[in-house]
Length: 430
Image 1 (tube, rainbow, N blue to C red):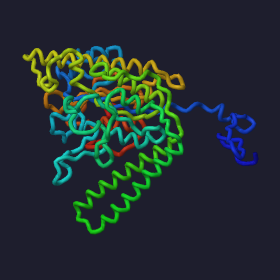
Image 2: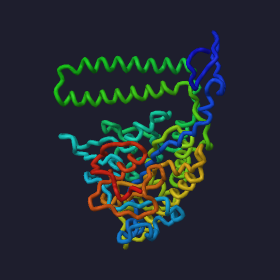
Image 3: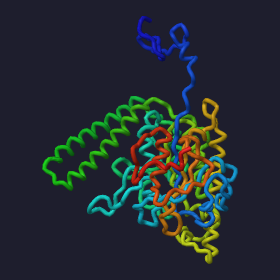
């Protein structure tokens, strides 16, 4: 007992190690009296394709501020008016593909930035946050997708809304059942076997890496660039293996919700996915999430027979398409409102609402039809310290990435810039 004391003191024998209770005589009084840690910050991006109904979703641009009139498309959110802001005038200046609602939404990248290539992307805002917020959680970030083809919902290329440091797509979990099992299914594989499996993966990785380095000698510039991308992929795998090793032996948390029924689609799927996002945050399984929402199955679940792409080409004289677009807006607003209800009702360990520690962004890279200006942007949650309860009109040609940079700074990620940002969005800072 003459060894230096720390918060984890143990009794040892030749066959066992038993943790001692927090005995005041061993110096634990100061720990017991210490103030509880503040709840962590979280960042959630909720994205959808095919945009919104411009005429009934945006507040009157001539009447910004806190006293704006709630537009019809956001009516179900009226009870939360003081707790979210609508920002108008934001866009990704390099966006030129009217069918891509989320491919460049969180990156702000120029798809033609690499000479000779017709597609290029860069890191998404969620992954910038995950590099810091994900250090102490089982999952650095969690990518969720609707249970349908991304193209059908106007999202564009990508395996989710997330893109890594080298601009490569990050896979997502499709539908509520897959997401639930990723978070809460118990791994019954013996710990020693888990360690052996990870060691085998590392051995294979080391061999491949050694061969690749040997191949690197004598390559031309183009091939060297391709191999550099390959090495970045190897580093990403190494990072994931290190994370897996860190959590070996730590059991999955108990699920705070029942396992979802298979086959959920559209409205019910989105509702359950919001519950899964809430559960992931509650259990501190991750602090960074993206959800690429379905649109096609949402319309079907509402009994709407108009195709989602056709719906986006509504005009005031095209009643069926316009009606479909407005009904879609109302349902999405209703579902988001229910999610905000639950964020407010769920308490942290210190008694504060979970809502106070979450930064939430909801929107799309597409406004309507194939228009990529004035990206629909709704920001909520108290986690980033932004101005809430306002209709905000950004100066002309303000990058959407200025909003993302503002959120990143608000949750404690002090990035110098992001995508095509020109600085933080001053109008958004409380």
